[in-house]
Length: 103
Image (cartoon, rainbow, N blue to C red; front, side, top):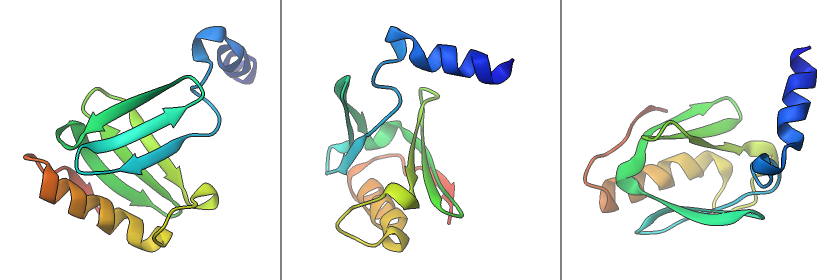
């Protein structure tokens, strides 16, 4: 029953762009997320927590949403192992409220 509900929700036109390929880029302004449904920017001050859990990086936002970067689909310019430290460096340099997190 739960699987059917999840499939129904995922198929909803309102959810279009919520699942599927996502491009995340990081700059002095914050984290930019580009999907087929839109383009948004989360400033460094809106990133509340950053954590690494085996093969995923979780970036929890202050609005309750999160960005998840799975190692299996990561294709960035730095190694996956160096990504979280690089993101933390950006946050420390450009944000006024460094996010919480664990390595």
